[in-house]
Image (tube, rainbow, N blue to C red; front, top):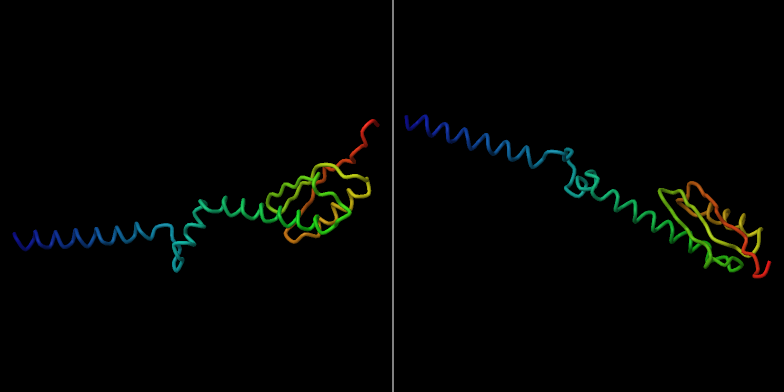
Length: 124
């Protein structure tokens, strides 16, 4: 009787160890680190996407700042997954196409939507 109780206890411990080990590894691909598992979980992908969008936005502003003939202070930039939307005003109609071409030339930009308008002088 004592022998049976000992075997049952040993078997119970073995089963518990296997279940705990399987539970701890659930969802983690073979050979993947826990950091990779966190990225795959979706918890950090939104954060990574926001960081990438902000970085692309900064690159677009930096590219516009290199062109002194363009007043980028009146231009707003929104980036989402490589798609960039620009809005605001420029002083001359020819600058609209110039701004669009500059933005298209930035690495990571997949499309450009322009809502730029020409700023009218006061009184007209």
